[in-house]
Length: 286
Image (cartoon, rainbow, N blue to C red; front, side, top):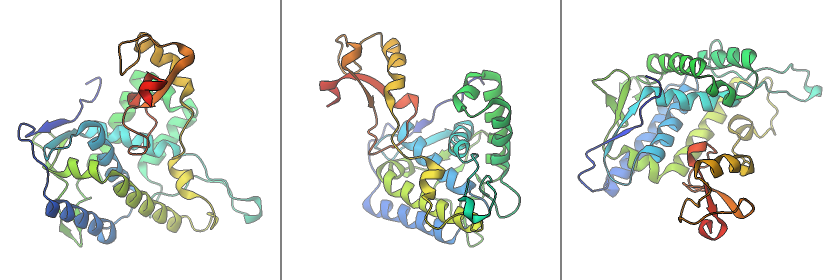
């Protein structure tokens, strides 16, 4: 397929939400997974973040299940790990050489090695990789195979026992089914979940790379780049896509008075990706 299909909601005809008890149970299971699950690579952290992002983008505020393509999860992995294939450069006084931070207790994680190879061939721009349709699809398929072979069916194991509260297997091999209420909880507790998972990921990386990391480095910033980017560069593109009209009202919009807005607010979903940008009048944006 040329493009991975979007997630599909299941049971949406019944408008209801998980009970308070179900929401608490979800958070308790997530905490157990992070505290007691076995993590030999950082893949499981990336998988949890990917599912949270997809729930925000594709889910809704009911207890519907969500069919999620594994290719879509693979795309999320590429976006997360692309930044993390930049070598970390310690202070000169430390005596340690720059290197790509380890993401695995053994040899370097396969996803990181694949993306490092792509960087060597095409340079630093992930956008450039995506514009090469054949190369992008090949990369997504290769990462998808790693995701389905490694973390996808090992994530929900705690103490050697299955804890399948997030998803079950789909009849289709290239899809998973987020269980009823899971997308709702991932959306509602998005900030809390991403803070927990990123914090655990940072501690994991610091543990594996203690010999090169400085104690005062802002590792979360280095790994995830959560700073809010300057969005002015996308304004001309949005101007063309929206044919010079405000996203929120049908009126024409002057280039000088246009605002680039996050459709899903930055405070709720701090990701600068094209599908979340719209162009609007300053008054409509406010």
